[in-house]
Image (cartoon, rainbow, N blue to C red; front, side, top):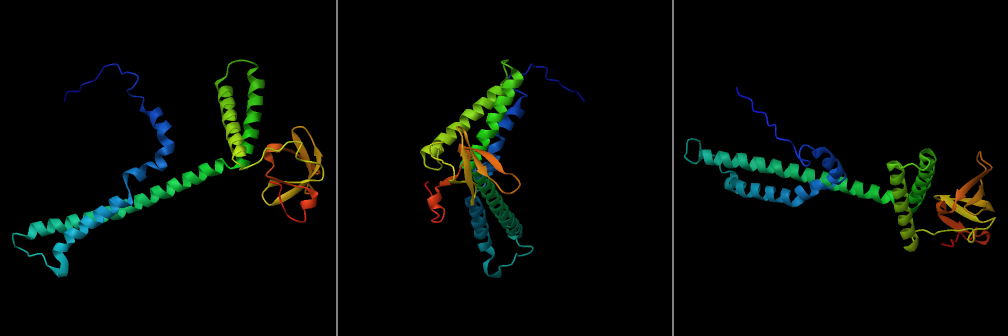
Length: 230
């Protein structure tokens, strides 16, 4: 047996498909929806029903008749179409579920309090990398800075849209109540330039909170009324 080896040098576009596939991977959750839809399933089901009309009313296959083979092929085709219809419907349902899950996760990543936490984490990363690189070029540092800029932009858009509020020391005073965790209010004991200090009886006497972490704010006079200034 002869074996032929292709020694032609590969160009930059050949044999390097893996990175491209990796870049496209996040969209796989929604891609099946464009290939298999409930409409595909309905079409296969309807075609099977059309074929089965031949056997409506219990019409038997006439063994030995010249129509036998054709009738048997129709039955096999109808059966295959029904199976295909069920599988296509399953695939379409799964694609929709995955797309909804992906959309939900994406929405969760951009909730104001999640964005605030991401900004905190990225700010810390940038400072750490700046100390480590000490002015030397760093792709990791450039990436962290770009991510921080992106999420700060997202934060600014959320503030502009009224989804959250950009609190400053001008908005908060000692004795006010602020909400950092959902449905939990904490009393401010001190107001600083970049943070406020709150009293926490459970284990910690005080804790510092950055302004962008504040979900909501109440004046002492609103404590009983349960009204929000936002």
